[in-house]
Amino acid sequence: MPHRDAFERLVASITDHGVFMLDRAGHVQSWNAGASRITGYAAEDVVGAHLSQLYMPRLRDQAAKHLDIARTKGHMWEEGWYVAKGGAGLWANISITPVLRDSEFMGFGVVLHEATDRKLVEEETLALLVLERARRQEAELERERLRAYDSIATAALALPAAPVQVLREILQQTTRALHADTAIIFLAKGGRLIPWAAAGIPEAKWPPPIELGDGFVGKIAAERQGRSLPNPDDPDHSLPQATLVGASAVVAAPMLLNNERLVGVLQVGSCEVRDFTQADLVVLQGIGAVAARALAYVTSRSGS
Image (cartoon, rainbow, N blue to C red; front, side, top):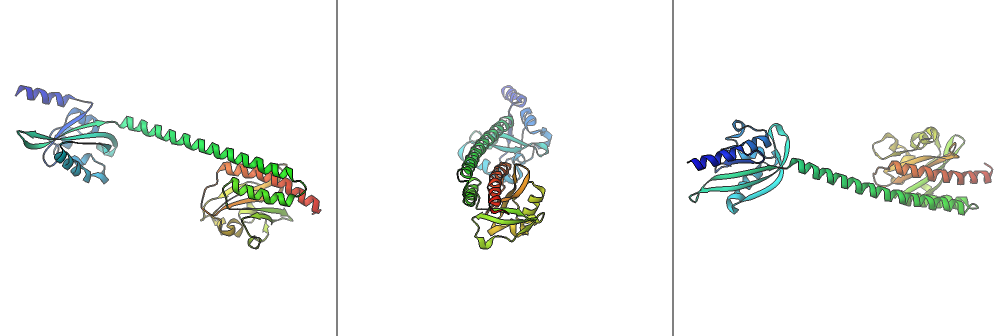
């Protein structure tokens, strides 16, 4: 039959679509150039194999279900990840249609169209959109932090005659600005760090004085370098000053007067495990500078 032979040659020569036949049980009977190009399998690699060979290992039982749908409904179409030769993933849409001859079911015709490049572009575009949304959210959070910092600095300047009350207000606003649960100021005095004021921590639960260089807070004072402690498994988490009233994550910064003299340490804690960001630390350092000025005023007034 010359027309049939010509049609089969035409199908075999198509390269932009995979076109192939399956027997009644779903085994490959024919394989065109497009199927070879898309999957990497030559005809001799795949003829006789089951359609499920092209499915992801965890989804291979879907092949039989797709054949059942095609047989029952007269057609099946789906888009998803499939497997090329060597295990590489390929994104493609697959169309399965039962083949009848004089009303007798002979098997299935399958058309496979690869769309991996389009899928990767879509995923890259989605990733960029997610990243942009995250950047906008971070920018908004940064604006909130700056507004909070501005209000904290304003409070410190507005009440110069009542620095202790200012410190308490600073701590309250610091926990709000950083969405934290606790905050405490340690005053550097005589080679030790002494708890001075706190928010969210009853005075009865304040830790004892800490030696410079000892533990989380002592190291920050000695090194004059702020850092966070997000991991409950960190050895420093065993120290009382790092786990105040059940805090699971803390961030602290040295309080430097004129960016030089150590006045104390400002620590903020969260009852939930979280990662305080570098932006949080920068804001905390700025707040610490404000608190340092207030503390310097307190110590100068008390003569200590």
